[in-house]
Length: 484
Image 1: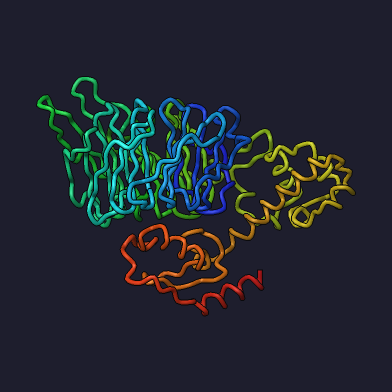
Image 2: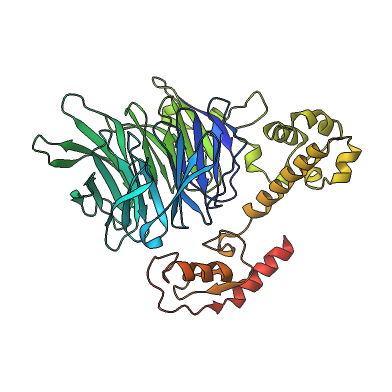
């Protein structure tokens, strides 16, 4: 049986990745931030969260196996290493060639960190020393998928070209499956367990062809590598964007453009559950390494946290929202309020929000004064004084939290074509670049100056750096802003 524990909704843009350690959950987004939650405290957000060290959207995040470090990579061409205990930056690793970094992964013993970029380069780092060891290049493709084998002696990569490759720790290619997924690989992950007798490992991959594939990987006695296709899973009807194994290797989850999350019996290739709670593409899924917990992220800007209990059925494997919505004792709901605009919140919704933000001491005051969502957005310093909120610090915190809500409310309704592809913010001075895409002028100029004149969208060279004002789009944005 699968049950929804909670829905986290702090990000202001698409959630791109989720990662779980024994004690923490991390999520990253196109809003340039990472958010970190405690799994031991009902997934409450840590005081130092969100982390804001990246200049552009964050594509991927992963915990070191020891759980002490968190790595994240971004369009800004860096992989940042964070201290999990303090939320401070430990190191900034600049990718060779300064190309946008799409994915990163730790080795099982934390001795290596690998990153993959839009220009097809792989960079292998000595993690303790934060030193670049070697690089390799996959021609004419973006590296979007990376995973270390559980033995730590091999590394799998997948690219937008559709190939799946295996590398040893000297970055020698030991296997290549061309067109493993038609139109491109989107994610790959090794099962954390291997067959103790035959030393066989399993690798899952997913792609634009709407398929999930399971491969057997064997390190032969002669030192060579053999990779064979074992299963092809067809449980989703649109491109599959993410996949993840459970800690025991028994379950395999995947997220898709069809808005579903599927969970398979990995050994027998049997579909167990289809989860339908996300409203847009499911871009990320991750299992806890120690618990029967899974997190899924989506372009609906939310992260769902699930508990999975084997040995039970749930309506033939289909989960409806009413089957899974659960409520915390502190008032956080897994479904309902996250679907509403703040202005449509009830008084109960406002009370639940206060508890989430650590302002539970004000819940009675707000309820007594019948403050709903619309009134919450109109609160000022004078209003709080009238409500007898005497602490200056507390008043400041309330106002800051309300401003954050306003930002989420505005951002969530912006048509995607009005957002700059680089900053993911509403454009004020849109211009058309040589690749045919429109960008915020300042953002694309900065990009061209620091990225060797490549397109942020296609990674191909720009034939010219000439930027043409997009007057039509600017007027459309102006009309939209006036009406909102």
